[in-house]
Structure formats: C-alpha cells, structure tokens
Length: 271
Image (cartoon, rainbow, N blue to C red; front, top):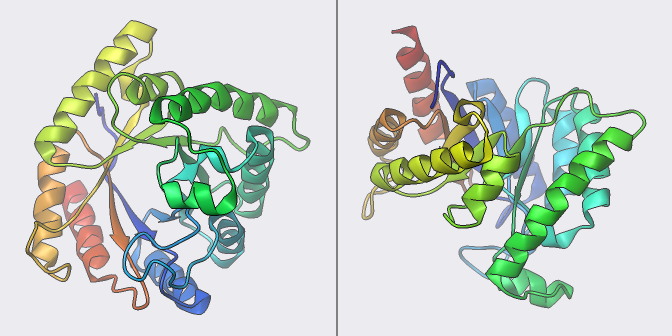
C-alpha cells in the first residue's frame, strides 16, 4: 500500500485568534524547521475558542504564502467544495500553483461547518448531497485545469479529507493523490483497508494514494507533551500513514511538536 514513500511532516496553522503577522511568522518558522507542507483551513469563523474571534480567509492567505515561502508545499486542510464555483476554484488553484512555483496541494472536502453556510448564504443541505457535489465537481476542476492558459506547472496533487466509507473513500479512490483522515491507528488502519477495497473495485493502484493522518496528543495530555506526538506518529506509521500533520492554533503558534516530529522523521528515514 505505502511502497517506499518517504515520511512527510505537515503543520496546519489555524487562521484564527491571531494577527496575520503572527501567522506569517509561524509559516516562516515552520519552513525553517524543515516541515514539508504548511496548511491552513477553509472556514469563515473560528472552530475553537471565542466563536466570533479573529479569523482570516483561506485562499487569499495561500496566495500570500506562495510569495512568502520558497520550499514548503502549501494548501488548505481542506477547502470546502461548497464555497466556490469549481471552475473558479480550478483557476485560483492554478494561479497559486504558478505563484508558488509548483508547490500547491489542492486539499478539498465536502464541507461540514454549518455556521459558515448560514452566515455566508450557502445552502447547507445534507451530508450526502454535499458529497455528491464533490464527486461532480472534481472532474470539472481537472477539466478546467486542462483548458487554462498557461496550464498548471504540474499535475496539482489533490488531497481529499474525510473518512466516510460508502461515498468519501470511493471519491478518494477515483480522484485523490492524498487521503487525509483522523482517528486512532486502529481506525486509520480500517479506513486504509476500505480505501484499498474501493481502489480494487475501480481499478486504481492503491499505492498511488499517499496516506495522511492528523497527529494529536492523548486526551488529558497537554499539547506541549511532544512525546505523545511522536508515539502517535509511530503508531500511525505502522499502519501505513506517511504524511503526519499537527494543527497549531493562535494567538501563539507553538511549533515545539513540529520540531520533534521533524527530528523523528529524519531519524526514522536514516535507519
């Protein structure tokens, strides 16, 4: 399933409860530490803490990061498919791809945060309908990429987030370069097996899909306990995860866990 894929480390800099200058400094620090990917997220309001706290828009920020960084890949974990016309999103992604010199990952999902929909006037509908729309729109995005002048600098990787076994993982098997999920190593192992089954049904080589997981401290532990992050990464590595991402929130972006995971990555790959 995983083949000889290298370990990669990502950080999700949550664009909430912070000034943009602090987010920008955190992105620069993450690149200096040696992470492989810097993500944000695609929401309009904070997901944690004060619900009306400071918050910034996803894709405008990615355009700025494309200029402000030089090595790391960048992307959203994840873009909400409902918020933008797929043709427009394709053009936005192609543009950030060029600005960054070919470092964009199109992270995308079907959407779930109802307040975003209500406040910005989007139809929330049902989870099933939103997934159907994602399946409909991904081919449109790829078709638009083929029509744009200039085209993307590379085949833009598509990361799909979500663990639904009946629809989401089928969409992953059809369209994704990377699958991202959350949960224990046992849960992730099960999802990998389901994804492999979908790949077999659809004629896709499962080794083509990089397996990505969020890494979190155990319940009751402080986020500063970096030993928990490394232990969690080891457990996920054993079941096939190769891209490990930690979410870090503002106003103070403490990248201590990222430093330890980067050191773990380098030591693990040196053996």
